[in-house]
Length: 392
Length: 194
Image (cartoon, rainbow over all chains, first blue to last red; front, side, top):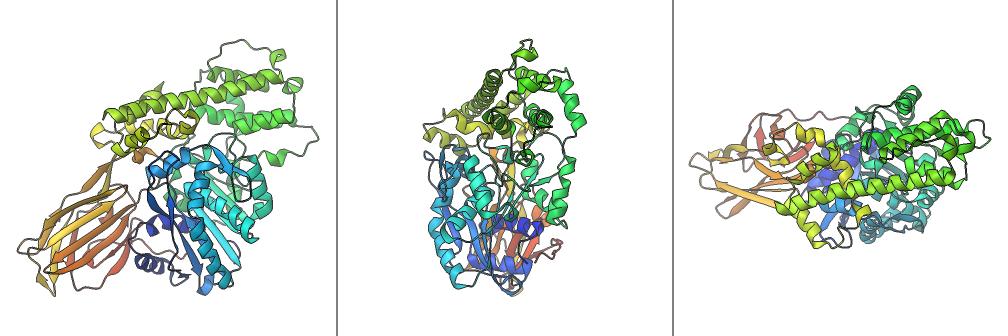
């Protein structure tokens, strides 16, 4: 066995929530042995601790994860398990968006990094145990925030110990900027990074651009889920476990075909029904943009198709195109025009648009306005929550 | 806009620690930081609109539990039964067994905006019985679902606890429970994983 199956990784990603909530290590061992037989061997100091919260938030100490050594059929394997946002404080950590440097020196979400580095002393202790136990495979596993921590842990292991770990994430938010995603993917290898996410899981949609997903090339694992609107329900580990049960990684990779159809996208682009700034509209816009960009780039001798994986969001894709200096107006089609019109509609701009007006500067200005609008929208809504919350 | 109004509705259910957290922070205006929460809140409109306000944000940390406590088969009278649960801060209540060793504790709820956030529910559970100068841990677990009576698959949770019985680990609704009590429930099937 080299990598874990999706089901094995999902079960461990789920177990860590219970493990960190059981009162003693002994209870945790009892639980794991009951579930899996005697395949894990605890190190006494394996309970990780981490501070939560942003730079301004009340600092509380809470368990974040577990480290495990395999024995028996898992001999030679070591495990880093990270749990997600069990506390609201953790969630605020998620929201603490500023950028700092990862172990490999690449730009990552500062909140994730801060949470990770409070655990570093414990992780180092565990790596010393790993070194003495003839470990050939290290697995970093996590759900939600835990997925971000698992990714950072993988980067940390590769940077500090020159070992290529396996990374498995379920519903992970985006960990870093392009530099991190690209460096992490190439140094560890896309084939060792397993990022699974449900179509309608809200968390992988955040933080918004310029954060992007790791791996940024190769395969990610899109799992169909009901609805077209991202939501909290399909962030749940129970759904992830159900989605991957009895399926190999290649079988999961094959599920990608259930994404929005091209016909559906074209219909959406051509539809005249009014749209506003909603998650649904942004999701459609995201899909439509990928579609239109592919049409624009068709016939261009440019090996970028691989770059347009699911890790590219609306903003990423736009930024990519802008960066490459693609002047869409030269290849303009009715699709591009419709796309920009949709963006303008979401922005509340009623301007009648002609193809000739689609300069690169104009598209960039629409892009920036859209980003600002999304930010303002969410800020306004959150302020209401806070005001009401204080009034209670 | 529908999403906005729904957010304000959820806002009315917010929990104290949540607002306190932000009151402590001076940087609420750091707008870009806060997008995500609202993105997730705003899309939960349908769930909130579909339920009554009295139930909104309510999660069950420990279901109502009743039963009989015995020691070597004899009812344990006048024993303190102390129950704790912790999801985001510890809650505690207690009762005393009657002459027949019977006790009963109501369901323990908590209101939290977290119910609407995309996060796993996990509440630690603990019941300790104090009898004479001895204490007995009769229940340690982690509740992984926010609904009531998940410990017994929807039935009322009625237990029989022999203080000298051996502890067993059982998983019900993905919730591990280490307990010397017995109750009428089918445990989760064990799947071969490794």
